[in-house]
Image (cartoon, rainbow, N blue to C red; front, side):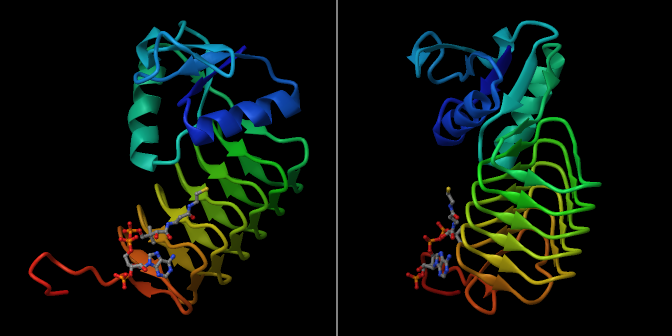
Length: 206
Ligand SMILES: CC(C)(COP(=O)(O)OP(=O)(O)OC[C@H]1O[C@@H](n2cnc3c(N)ncnc32)[C@H](O)[C@@H]1OP(=O)(O)O)[C@@H](O)C(=O)NCCC(=O)NCCS
């Protein structure tokens, strides 16, 4: 009986994956909704995870995922991976504990997914690609072969990352962007070819 941390959009999508995969879900762990019911399942506070219970984090924000994993591990929980039966996981690909792979995703051969990483529906991940911890590949994104997505990085919906590129730690590739060059850590890039998002300060100076 798996507990899903987060009862928002991704958490409920994780429930859908569990149902399709025939995995029983005990309930949700969510501070904001604790005490209530979501999709007919009880919601508890994360600190109330029964010791030794399996859990999966269904939350998009990698920083929140990191904080929650620490709380849930300290409570004696252990992370499990959920894969939709209509996802393809090719041979020699390894998924660390806590990963979530949604329906229609295709994760090619010899790929490594780090702990608490997520590949959302209809996204593809090419051969020999490495995903660090808490990486997110949003719906319909295409990550080519031999790419390195460093810890806490995110690839937005419909984005393309060309082969061999690195997306740095905690970087964010905007929806529909095409990554043709390495993305520095903690940088948001958008567009085709992808370039850092110019942010304008309140004074109007970029
Ligand atoms: C890139 C992103 C993170 C930027 O978010 P943000 O910091 O809140 O940026 P804003 O919405 O304030 O937009 C800032 C500027 O960037 C532009 N912009 C935002 N996202 C863009 C994108 N993906 N491609 C091109 N331009 C984009 C906006 O038009 C705006 O330009 P303007 O100042 O000329 O009007 C976000 O827009 C994005 O693409 N997120 C991914 C969403 C996604 O895939 N969700 C999946 C959920 S299932």
